[in-house]
Length: 436
Image 1: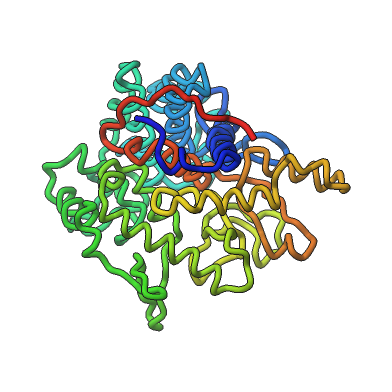
Image 2: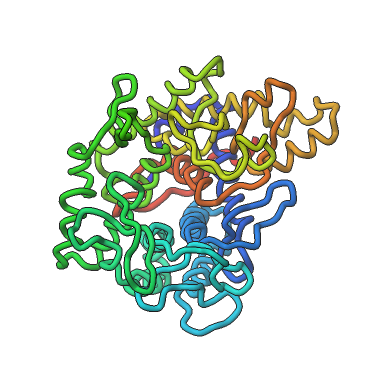
C-alpha cells in the first residue's frame, strides 16, 4: 500500500504539515496511555498528563494507534505494547490494570474505569458501543499486525468471542441496546447511529441468530443505508429524524465517521462514501450560515469546552442546529477521504492561529505557554469567536475517542481508505517528512 495521490500531490509545506500532524495524532493517544497498557478517557493538555478516569473506547483507539505506529515505524515498542494492552483487556485474574471491569453475565465492558485499578468508575454504565470500539480496535490491529505477530490475532479473537453480542440486539432485530444491566439490554437506539459497530460485531459472531442477522442485513449493512430515514439540509440528504414539532434533528458528524473507519465493509463501500460527502458538505455549509466565519473554520465535533462561559462549557456534542461555536479539526480530518481539500483548511488554521513556530512573535509569555501546551499535538478544538474577541480559549482536556478521527482521517489521507478495509495489504517504508 503506497502513499495516496491526494497526499503526494500536496505542496511541500502542506505535505510537511500533514505528515507532522499525522504522527502527532498518534502522539496524543500514546500520551494518554497508562503503564498497565490501558488508556485514559482524556489527556489534560495544560497539565501534560492523562486523566485518572480510563475509557474502554479510548483503549480501542489506543490499539488502532499502536497498529498504525507499528506499520509507520513511529514506535519500536508498538508490538509489545499491543500485546500488553490486549492481555490487559482479556485478563482473567485480578491485579493492577486488570481485569478491566465487565458485566460478568455478558462480557460487555464498563465504559469508564479507574486508571490505576481497572475497577468500574462510580456511576459508569456497561456500554455496548464503547465495548465495540475496543473490539474493533483489536480486530484492526489483528489485520495490520497479526500476520507478523500471531499473538495479536489470538488475543483479538479471544476478546471478540468473550462477549455475548446477541444480548445487545433487540429481539425484533430493529435496534441496538445502548447499555447492559445484569446481563440484559436496556435503552434501545434506533438507526442510524454509530451503534452500527455493535450490529456488525454481533453478526460477525452470531450470524445464525435471526434477530442479529435481521438487524445487520435489513438495517446496518452498508448496501442498505440508502433505505434509512433521512432529513434534508440545504438540498443535502443526511441521517437524522424529525422532532414532534416538525423541525429536523441532525446527527453529530462523528456518528457517520466512526463506521467508515471501524467497519471494513463501510470503508470499502462507495455508496456510504457518498453519504459521508453529503454530511461533510452540510457541516461546512452550516458554519457559513451561522455567521461571518472564515472558510477554514468548521467541524461539528464532541469534546470538552472547559474554560468557556457556563452556557458553552462542559462536555459538548455539537451538531448542525446545536453548536457551541467551537470548531473541531479532528472532524475535518475525519472527512478527508471524501473532502481531501480539507487538509488546506487544517493548514490555514494551524499556520494562522496555533503554530508553535510563531511563539517567538508573541510578547505575552503566559499566552505562548498555554498555546504550546494546548496544541502540543497540533490541531484540536478552536473557538474563532473567542480568538477574535482577544480572549483566546485553550483546550484543557482532549477526549481520546473524539480525537480518534484525527488519526483515522490522516491515516486514510496518507495511505488510502484501503488501510481500514478487510485486507489492508502491505505498507511501504515511510520516506515522507515528519516535522514542520
